[in-house]
View 1: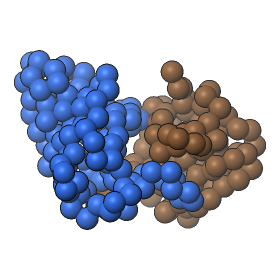
View 2: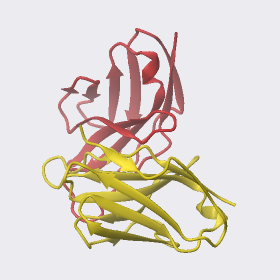
View 3: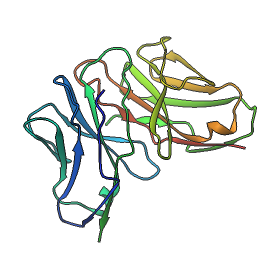
Length: 113
Length: 114
């Protein structure tokens, strides 16, 4: 699995868009980009995933660069409840065998009132 | 909504005790996982199971065992707890098939071994 690099922390004003970057320069052609978040004292929560096209769901948008070496998770209108650690993971979709996810240290997003 | 529940949020045990951590999911998922999470180390996979009575070692299985007698339940067992097993333990489940990589996590059990 490709490694990912994320900034350790970011702040965002409440109501503004939060843009969380992730570098995955060694990503291979069949690896997807996944985002999870973990709110303090809770288990990780799946947010979104994508391969090469931009994706959007009710929680967030995922923008993947054309060369797929980096991506950005966008929370369009951050709320205080979005304060969490955000993890970017790259993974082969549907890989059999060890179906685990490698979580790094992520980005701690703090939404400021 | 998928629900993954864990038997305890907080647990305090003594060195040498046998510890059982229970995880139950209500969405008929085939795959279940046990992770531990420690500061600076992210999540590390201990064991996983892709079917009843099936189990596979993850990255750090030493000192742990698991049991999957029913599809909805996956138990993690510390045969003889040690202080270096003090950690946050997270259970997860996922369906086999199209979205098998989307894992749903429980709230976690914070274990302290004295």
